Each structure stands twice: as structure tokens, then as C-alpha cells.
Amino acid sequence: MLIVANWKAYVDSREEAVKLFALSKRLSSLIKRVKIVLAPPAPFLGLLATKNRSKVSFAGQDISSTTAGASTGEVSGKTLKTAGASYVIIGHSERRAMGETNEIVLEKVRRALSNGLTPIVCVGEKERDDNAEYLSYLKEQVTTVFRPLSPQERLKIVVAYEPIWAIGKHAEDAMTSHDLAEMVLYIRKILSEYLMGKSVEKVKIVYGGSVEPLNIRELAGGSRVDGFLVGHASADKEMFSALVKALK
Ligand code: PGA
Image (tube, rainbow, N blue to C red; front, side):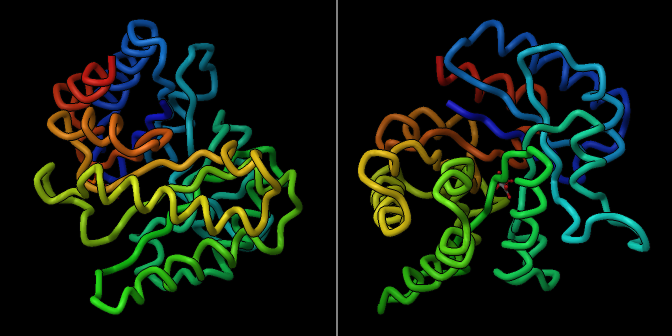
């Protein structure tokens, strides 16, 4: 099970960042079936990941769509890699809300791949409608990224399904494992247009949106999901510890 801890901007002190990293290392050795990937704010990524020799991996929270040069405020793929990241979150809904389009997401995925970073591509509908238009919306998000890539590149992507209506709330507002199971199947069906036979199963699909200690076990058990992208609960030591231990 892949657990991506998206600290967003919740963690803003060095002390807190160091404690959460230490906790993640302990949890990784305690629960072998869990692979923890920490996504700290960029300066803390440099602080924690550069000399990391543990089982915990690191992710950028975003990546620049440009290579380098005159781009104030941007963090390039090469910089992330040098700082110790092996993954990068791309197209998070909080970035998309600031104008990031499917095309920009694709550009960022290419930058990640060319720098040896595993892209965690976020997709998910804003809301659900009775005509199931949200399914076409989701398909467009997945297709724009997968279609132009080579089969080898497609296999490297982690799809993070994060319905926006479920983000930043509590366990009771998250998806049910039954609905999640349906969405995982649906995403695999879309992927089967771009990947042959059994290789579709190799693409990891994780879920994000109000994952907490209370619901993670049920979501994991009933849905064939490969892991979780956790926001607020990953920035709280007690919650994060309980959440990972619930997967034991
Ligand atoms: P949440 O955030 O766990 O706080 O809902 C998830 C995310 O936005 O990645």
C-alpha cells in the first residue's frame, strides 16, 4: 500500500517536519506492507530528503512545467530530483483551481518523467450529477495525460483519484468503499484503451479525499485501491500514526 502524505502548507515549522519524518521512519519499519511517501513544502523537502537513507521516500507537491532559467518561484524537475524527491504530485485540485489545465498537467508529467521522477497525477470531479457527466470529465483528465505517452511511460504513472467534493473534510464525508471500488474499475477501464492486457493492473491507483484513521481500513479493504493520498490527517502526528497502523 502506497501512502502519500501531502503536507500541503499545514506543516510550517522545521521541528514539526523533523518529527513527522521520524514518525514515518518508525511506521515504515513497523508496518512492512506500507510504503510511505512524504510530500513536504519545497524547503522542507530539501531539508529532509537530501541525505535520506531510510525506506521513506519523498515527493514534490508540484513541479515546474519549464526546464530552468528565468522562472521566478518555480521548482524544476532537476531541482526536485537533486533535493531527494523520487515522486511528484501533479495536477492537484488546489493547483488546478489556480488555472492549471489538463495540457499543463501533461507538460509537467513529461518534465517529471524526463527527470526520473514518478508522477502522481491527481484527477477527480468537482461534483456528481445525475447524468453522470462527471465520468466524461474524469475520462478527459486521464486521457489527456495517458494518450500522448509511450506504453513504458504510462506504466510509471500513479493515478490519484481525488473527488474534489470529498477533499478537506472528515471520514464521514469521504467516499464509501463501494463507490470507490466502482471508480477504480472505471479508471482501469479508461486505462485499458492505452495499455495492453494485464499491464493495466500494474498502474497504481490511489484515493484521496478525507482519508482518516476511521475510514482507511474499510476503504482499503473493499475497493482494490493501491494506496492513499492523505492531506490534513498526514500533517497530524497522532492521526497519521493511527491511520498507518489501521492498515496493519
Ligand atoms: P484531505 O486532502 O485528506 O485533507 O482531504 C487530500 C488531498 O487534497 O490530497
